[in-house]
Image (cartoon, rainbow, N blue to C red):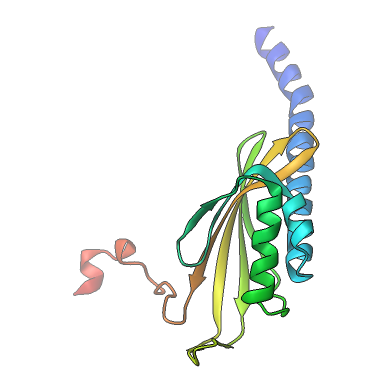
Length: 173
């Protein structure tokens, strides 16, 4: 009897839990898509509006920048779009993976491909990839980006076809 009752309860609850996960995943996907649209439109105010009040950024140089306010975040994006991007949008980001750590926290990995770039000092940067890790948090009013960490993928940084820890001793002889 207990086994039947447990089975009935489990079958009744599973669709609800699955529905919540699907809904949360869709909401986080929409958040990242809105972030990407604002980023590609060079919309500093739009990006700041999608951020949690305690947003943190780790840029492609590994510099950690906690923000004190959305106004400061908007100023940062605006400065970057003017002085670094010089009005030329960055590439679109594609969601590669999403993981929920809890019902209110998700980690999202995105990928973008950059064309060749020429810096002001004349240095050429070859075409390269970028992995951006977002931490999305559910807050009153919806999902927000709490953290963004950018990682460059330079040519030659690709993983080998067989990773060293997956090669047995007999394969190396």
